[in-house]
Image (cartoon, rainbow, N blue to C red; front, top):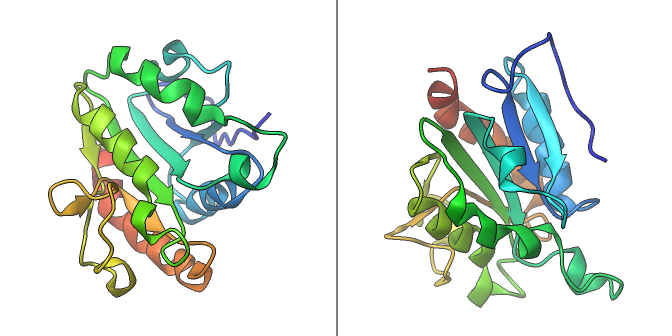
Length: 190
């Protein structure tokens, strides 16, 4: 069970729901960095798993999703599926009226360049079909390391969220997370 962070007793509508998977890896590490660097917000951290439902997410009007293209299910044979495998198809039925959503996605831009942050792109495409307001897109050319990559993580010249590579570029993650927070924060404080 993921930790919950509360600064004061707030309703779902005032808190940011940070939903992520897989557990115990780079996505979780980035989720905690985001919470630590975004000092002015209250978060509920929730792991997406086989029990997560749309009803768990719909009460939040401010949401951050964290997703990985290659995750625990690839390096641990005990896992044939992770949370997003169970949950992503359910999002098409979500009622996201007046909901702001940002995404961060992890991938390996060296070993798996052809599928770099594809899962984030897939999630972005699902969310674009809903009534959610998707914020925090990043230009395909913003980061030199990723500009020559052609993956399904890019939609109309942009990543639908913040692309990160914790395998080869973890030394850049803090700086990129902090800068991304500053771009999405105004939308989350409206």
